Length: 247
Ligand code: NDP
Image (cartoon, rainbow, N blue to C red; front, side):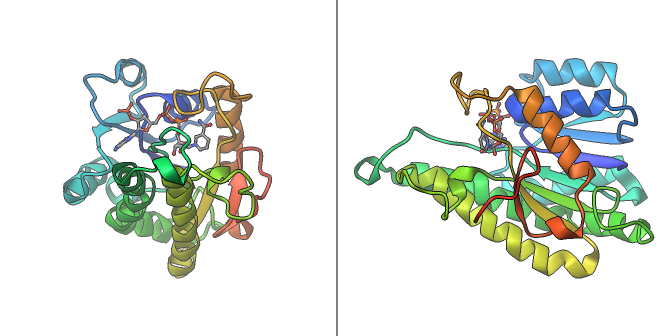
């Protein structure tokens, strides 16, 4: 792949993805790492200073009005190559709550970041993804052509929900799963694959210290998965180790 854009790279899985991408044997020509504040993103600044292929762009995924301007900045980086991979990683969660304690603001915030952000960002970057797919029309569908990864969660699975609660997070990720499926249908004709990936339960600020997986294990699995993604993964729901999950 020539180019990848990952949202929410200040910490956690997003930062881990950038760390691993720059260490690959054949790293992408452009690694575009977005964060809400470059000034505060010290680890990213350090990576960008040492790796000329890393570009830092600011993006709060709730600022939909800025998406057009943002996509112009991405275009200036990738130019006529287009964008091979859009990796929607930025996400929010809130405390586990039962229905008696659910708050309107938490529901709204979860949908803004976890669901609406990935859909609207896909829309804004679609011309660049299409460009990459066209430029690589001789290649098989996948990461070397054009791919959208939506970072979802097993907590967004309706089939696997036996514990209830967690309304903002579960509902926003379930809605993201539906968006993944619809995007995969809509964009198939353009040669763009779309897949949902659950990173596992990972030790990050969101996953907490009891999580069984470290960031490196999750990220190594995710990168292996996206390198090998093919038509059979289109519109599917997979976890970091390649296992398919039930919707
Ligand atoms: P973290 O809480 O560690 O990091 C979240 C990242 O998202 C941060 O970089 C944060 O930026 C960014 N972010 C939050 N809100 C916004 C926003 N409005 N605009 C732009 N960026 C934003 O979470 P993880 O790394 O663990 O999670 C990454 C993804 O993986 C999420 O989508 C999450 O739902 C998913 N996931 C994680 C699991 C886990 O166990 N950790 C399990 C299943 C799914 P900032 O630093 O500026 O706050």
